[in-house]
Length: 114
Length: 108
View 1 (tube, one colour):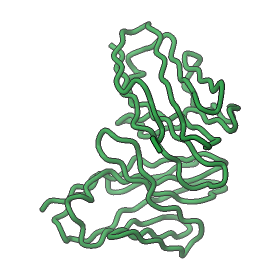
View 2 (cartoon, one colour; view 1 turned 30 degrees about the horizontal axis):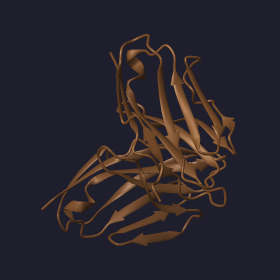
View 3 (cartoon, rainbow over the protein chains, first blue to last red; view 1 turned 180 degrees about the horizontal axis):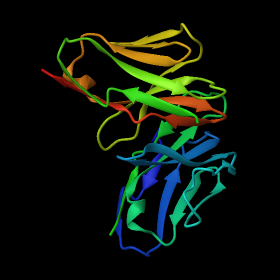
View 4 (cartoon, rainbow over the protein chains, first blue to last red; view 1 turned 90 degrees about the vertical axis):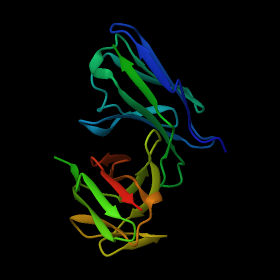
């Protein structure tokens, strides 16, 4: 099993540019989570999906952030326009529907906005 | 406000020196208390879930315990490979609320 796959692993962009982060969950998992991790705020949930449907997006910081899950094997997190304060590590995690236990995390995307 | 607080922020131990990490929580409707390990440059890795006060779980040198207000991660005779950041999280309504983590360093 390849685990949760995220791309790119590193992204450096300039303020005002659009950024798209991608995630492929573990096959068969029906819940997907997007997190952001910074030194100041730790690991924060941005949004999560069950069966491709957004359930809770209360953690999305503002309208510049949007997330989609067009099918069970792919999700995107988009920032438009990006700002320096968006610099962080963004994690995607997936969970099997039969358990409240293990969320399997991807390796993360380190985003730097200059 | 629902929150999870971990202490200390950082802990340095000598190899073999046992200690405990604390996780205090105020999470309404808590459905479980989770512990994760995170190595530098990687995503968190699941360790334990505890569901009720008095419950204990063990894995190698780690033992997690739970009360109604806090959880402890006890590390017995740690080794350098136990060095990592340990995160706890409260499960509420389908989502996890994470603490800031404790960065553990074990020196040989």
